[in-house]
Length: 218
Image (cartoon, rainbow, N blue to C red; front, side):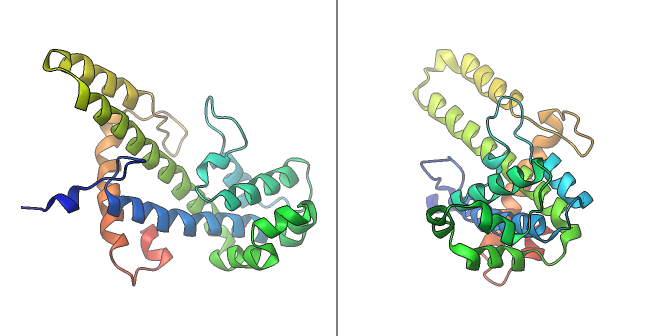
């Protein structure tokens, strides 16, 4: 039997604590790598367009895709990069620095943190793969949020409302945006089991302090 602590969930997301740690560790590294790839890539490189396309805002989501970034300073850097790319300007680290006001540059950690992001991306060609990881992480976070919302409703529902509760939870999952490699919608009953399996894999990986970023990606 597993102890209750192994099933404990965070109040904010409803995901298992270990899964939250895994998503946080992996997402932060992937976010840095995506930003590093964007700053390292040559002006007009196909990787830039691929990353930009993958990290699109999504239907009904405001902004330029910054919701894929869990770290606020990463969202700031991403918005700055997109603003440069969209007007056809160069987008290396020096251009990002020039684009930011001094207080904002200090808030993100200055040139030193941009260099950290550059070091996180070992190969610009892997940039789209890192971006796909962010898309998947966003899906996992939304899955956890919908699960938490369903669990909260279920906890206060009377037995007579069980069918209605089930329909509401299923409707929430149906409204999660699932997209495959060809940008086609994927039914939840196909991708759902894979998503849950990935959450468990991440939870296990987070408990191993020797895991590297590349090992998290496998």
